[in-house]
Length: 470
Ligand code: MN
Image (cartoon, rainbow, N blue to C red; front, side):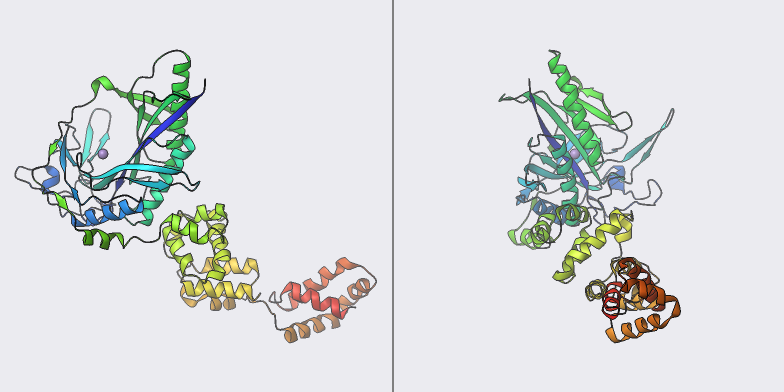
């Protein structure tokens, strides 16, 4: 029997607002001491009152628009009760009944559309670090703003699950609402997987794999669950609805808790925060700030840049913006240069933090097009444009300083060639060429390149030599 997998994904995105969701404490705790970015609100001290961060609302509008979602004019917060040492309040402030972001969709590079059920705002929990017989609590992350994006069960393969998560990451990065650092948990994925016999109109029992933080682990966990559930059904047994953890090292999921222990969160409206009422003008003004999205770039550059290259470059929003600033005739060669640096040179994303100016990039492409720079030299100058010591000198000056500009001036080239042809050590080669030994032309071109200190354009040299030796 053939089984069809159905997958739904919940994704938590940490928003990179300046301050936290409900207090004026720094939201960026990178490099800071544990429990140093914490307010009385985060500690849940008696008498504390949360105050909503307006910037988080603006970020949510942009994030929603990036996913083609409806932005709800009215939304509000609820308390989700549970006790855990990383949440001193004893409840999470979230949006259960009326989320700020309504239905929408994300289009994968393949063209498949994944529908979004809704997305809501909520505060993050703190962080526990466990040791042998004790644990440490760090509350720096408490009430970092999150949006939780809930997809419809629209995904039917591990590959699409991977692509969906990656596209979400790109959308959030392009929208500028998160730092997008997956390694540090800026985006976390909970993946629900079930399988049902082909043709069945009912979904199978689902399992949920929690807290995946890479696209690859999402793909592997889904593959594993499909295989595990298929084996269970083929043995005539039943899949148990449960929450699972993923072990990246073993490549297996392990049970965390089953449905019988499911929690009752006792949701209730948050009494300390007023509802959010957004005017049409406010929402439209924020939505208009959304920069071009990956889909816009695919439309714009799809005919110019090869699909594979474009998908590599689309991981870097600043790079795409830069490509958009470069003269349209140079976009193709520029995209190849960037891709070769990212792929072949194995440079990290940080390498692209400080991109060369569009003026320098245009100048570089122009020199290459005029054949003043060979392709090797073009790449060399391109790399120097990232060097803090050199970049301010400009593409043309760098090329000159490195002696990379090719001699294309025919008069000057002829003079150099004549000098070489006068030299006694080239006489024999000239005779051999005239007697039909084609390959000695390489030796002669080499002599001219040497005489020109590598600045002559080899193909032009060869052309002139052939004429002169006729
Ligand atoms: Mn959540």
